[in-house]
Image (cartoon, rainbow, N blue to C red; front, top):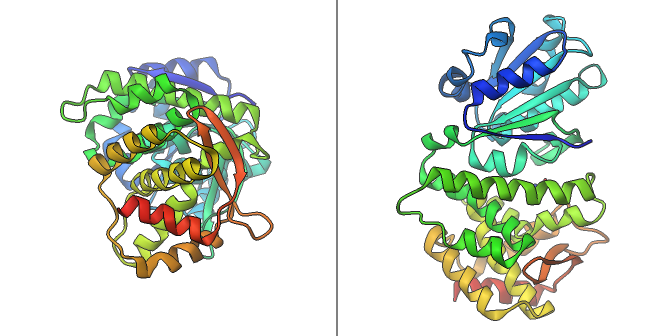
Length: 348
Ligand code: GLY
């Protein structure tokens, strides 16, 4: 099922038009404590919202769990939601993942609309139909593929984000550009972070979302080419987990940006990826994202974390690499030594 992606300059107006075009029985709104306070006012004026039943959950990925999910089910049930009801998820990736899963499972599935409020959420989580919650200490362990009926993206929400949170989303845009074309990559590498032009950022974001949408349409349930979207994430998830273990948590996109460099190094060694582009991206990442401070005594731990990655098959660590920009090779693997060399490269 194709998702409708709405590029919006006025979320209230576009949401109003969208709701007007739909027929539903019962409108529900899910927010978290932050988006309730800071983002809901932007859609409050939509006449249909006056009848919406609203519920909010605590913010933060730690609350993306069965307990919160169960509260959302309870709320829907107690307010007589039915198969024709519509749920609006207003928030970042945590909220749209959880709300999407609540909708996908309530009465075997009700329709939902995602309105992402972070750049990371807009470029990744809200689009593509992956929904779910964390379970047993594992991220997104329980979930379902369930596309939103529509995703309304308004960059107005991003103006309140600080630069690290913008850069976090931008790392996924860098990844999409690498999967797409040299032209996309060039645009991403030349965005001026000193004087942020939100209109330009919005243009880049929208192009980036379309790259993801194209890949997801081809392979919605990740049997093959959708794995391309994992570029940077095998190392990235290990960096992210290590950062939590060391009690120095980093934003997801930072870990992904570092992961992209390591995985492009593997692409260079194993698939002949262009050395100059590798160096250009390494410079870009180091300048904008710095590097996570750890030493080679932690290499073994990173390797162990990678071995537990749920993308692995037949006990081999799975990577999505590039032969060149836009030329993807999924289901690649690398030895312990090659992984160490990639870390050495990043830290040299
Ligand atoms: N975040 C990667 C995907 O949606 O497949």
